[in-house]
Length: 410
Image (tube, rainbow, N blue to C red; front, side):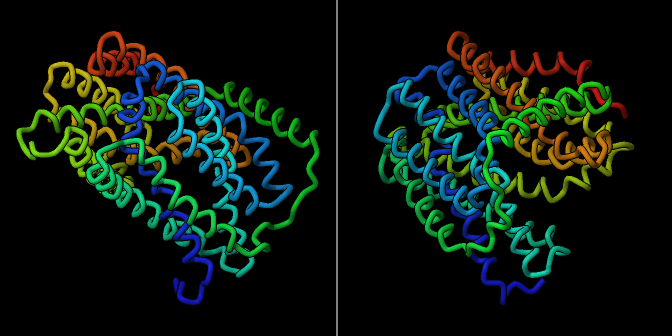
């Protein structure tokens, strides 16, 4: 695949790299805790973000089809930047809710839109046959951005001594990505449709119809529940690694000449960099992991049990102050998620007719959002009352108890 003469590929690659430079990501819980938010309030912010994103996906999708994908992407970055500025300049919880909704607008405008721009480019240049490898190459720059993000974020915290500066710093790569988006040719917008309110209502009804119809298929329902419960447990818990890492860094009798924030930044940056290397490797080897089992269903079921078990162990280790074990368990939890995702999509595709595949994956995303909105506040409430360790343990046990309901056919 010769990309030297492709003038758009560097722009697509730059988009993927820059969009993952969210310097606040490795420190988001620590930032909120530093501003006095409880774990319950943090969980509610997560729930608001995910629910708002899903609600907004239909109208923002209609906007992209009617006014152009490039305009939708510009709106996404304007929404993101507005969110970052609010997070930096204000500290009240109600204002954070507004910032999260603006962030959700960004996610909804961006969701699937840039992929459509890439596919339109390949269609225009007569190279649709290489879309898998082409998109994979652009995604590799996104993964590189995630790894670099962890190191830059750690460096910024170390040299500034504060967490909230991450929101302001994140406006720089996002402004650059906005300028990059403005350079995209107008032709990539494709054929525009006239905007009509009935189109929005029609899409909403279609989504609800698909959502209800899939529930009549037992095998498909279990596949969707298995994947969404696993995905939601990951989304709700993954950031709790941050306070664990910070406490671990403070307990180490090294680099005592710098502040607690700086020591935590070094630890968090290093571990997240390793995590992204792990997850990248796991994603590339998902097929090899699957081949170790007699069926895809067996691999899915084992992955579910293993994920819940790792969460349970991480919680117990945190409660017992065996922090090294907790960190290692979280690393495995992240890697397992990367292994599972390709298998989930493959298994779901086997259970659902190809003509409604997009609807099936949409239902899975909706279910993941619903479960995340349930898990995140519960986890936050338990963490406030009993501590992070007990909260993770209880959620892990709760996920394990759902196995009989979500077990797929092997």
